[in-house]
Length: 117
Image (cartoon, rainbow, N blue to C red; front, top):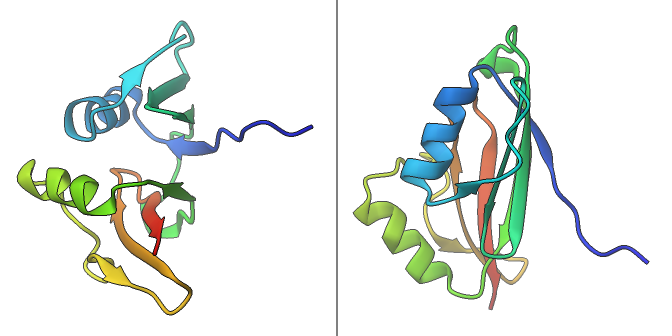
């Protein structure tokens, strides 16, 4: 039986990635005894990162879809904290029955937040 999924995304600099996810998005770290690996969590989700020093952010297609039960509050919190929303990813109701928005992390990993409506 499958229980959960923890995506692994590339990062160029562990400190920059940790700063973004912890200080801007409100995640916490755990099990970070590895120099080239980062694990963060918030509420019920985990995201893992592996060091990829030569990553070209313009060529990075890392993506994660994060479901929430209060999309409006998540979106407003990010706006209140001056987190940049993807220029084409502002909060909107999509034809597939989801209310979504997106942002890009420092390595150009796309984070899409969504709630079924």
